[in-house]
Image (cartoon, helix red, strand yellow):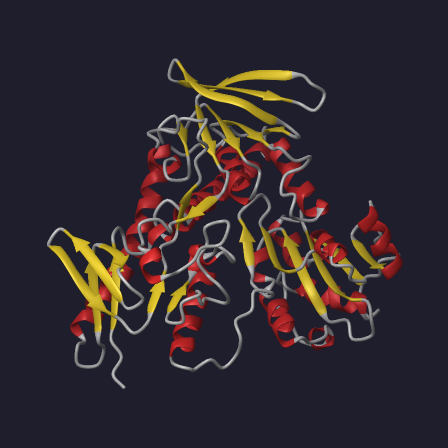
Length: 471
């Protein structure tokens, strides 16, 4: 059966994955990390700090965007030219459902209607605004505006201490030209992560001059004389009024579900305005939703996996069920944090008895060679003889390179023993994984009884987990 595909896009191909999103922020983070590393060396030798002009930062980001944009553009162009083998059409315009099989395309050329056996909705998301705060993307901004500034702000307040808020606090504090304030309603940043992970990151922020307003409630944020004035209230009843040059709102994203004509096709939304009914399917059997609108994990790689799975469902080609349990994530902080599976506090919430092993970076030869010994590996397994892996957290240099093998073992529902005898490259950060596994098997080179501060191996029994749940 001949299969034809039409891609409808009203804006820029690639969306937030390229523009004002993952690629832009991570390119900026890479620059900031290099600046911070250089300045560590400069300070150790008593030399003046290195500074990079903001226009140079913007130029590098724009070059990265251009490279990725060209790849997408060239690919689409080649697909359109290969009409003998690929039945692909690209339509620039707004798409709107007229029925479960009809889509209206509105563009500069006018309107047209196409018929489709199957439809995938991948309309993405946008930054969340707060109705009480006037956001002009110049003085008070979201991630859509932060990269378009003309220069470093002398001072910046960030509302929201989740991943994105902490990433931007890391970026601007590492670049060294901006005094950063972070407003956090919780008692610590990254409240969804284990406390030991959050502490390493927050300690570095504080060392870098970031002011963290913990357990603080934002009472107001307004523009006064071209600057931002914000007022917070603290748990003890005290209030603070602070003036800064710019503000960044990092309070989440909302799915783009309006104006899609969902009601015309009978597609229903969840209470939070997400589309998916179950694993990329909507309540209408031939309509699928993937990416940020699906209501699962809002990551570029997850959107791609969901899209592939949706196509397999359409043509009954599914070989394995989609899983959200072994998704690898990276938090671009200082140091880098990588995660897969459950963390310790999630295991406790689920009432799971566990064994936990932690290895400090100071015990890893590659970390010592890089002079980057801050961080740790933390692997969580079931508290039984099989010791199946439930999750891992890597905090430190090259952290994102260390979790893929663990993700595979989680997917395979395998035990840790397979990693114990695997020969890892030396010196490499991932040797730390092998040492963690050996600690659990009581075969490690160094012993936790000797290096108590750098190596830990402990259990959370059923009784202890139950007690922690009650706290």
